[in-house]
Length: 300
Image 1 (tube, rainbow, N blue to C red):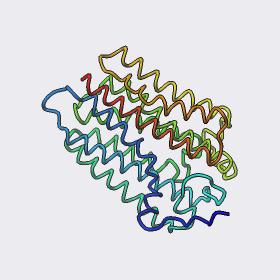
Image 2: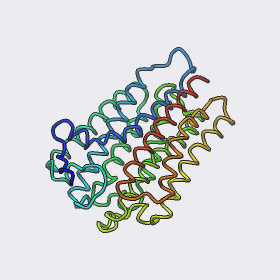
Image 3: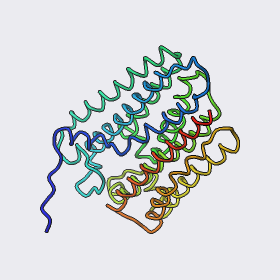
Image 4: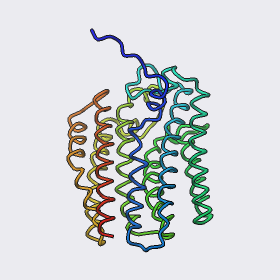
């Protein structure tokens, strides 16, 4: 019999709560959006890409802490939860402290975003405000839309279109068709992460009354949705290459990770097995996304 594993403490506890495995969802759109701006001209203000990355990372971490807090106080994260450690649900951190961590992270995203808005234009204030509100309302507030099966829409829109096209926009100050096309793949990769997360949590979410898309679809159709998202993301990359002069098709470098994830989901992986699939999905997103960014940049 193996001895019980002690929960993390100190910095390791907070890093676990920040859910670092989800950070590719913030890194990839900024990388791809920045790549689209390569070759645009010598006047490109590249510091803005760094600022955009800070905003994306802070927003992702803020959403993770906000979800931890909201799900914890609602009782959604019960003892039967299979997924990664939750700070409030586990009882290791007081809810008010996690809420403060979320607030600070949102504040960092807002402050750096405000700097970009001052440098680029007031339209970014509107986009930034919408991102902050959407991040909190995902599982917070009186009617969290994540409990209504709309979480995937939020992830696709904000960590796909807004983050990718927005990064290109702050660099070249125009909406790029290439960035818009690439954002579809980026959004699908990010949404696939949430689909796997919610697939794993179907039993607990059903009991807690959390009507995620996975709960609404059921196990079989959620697995099919994951497969279609992964296949569609790569198909869009190929089509974008054909329709433009940018090598988005380089995303196919990540196909081995995509195949591993699809096979695991297709054969019926459940519970803790899906934690490994979540890791594979994150790796696929990071490798495919960075490869796409490299291909687009080199062909710029």
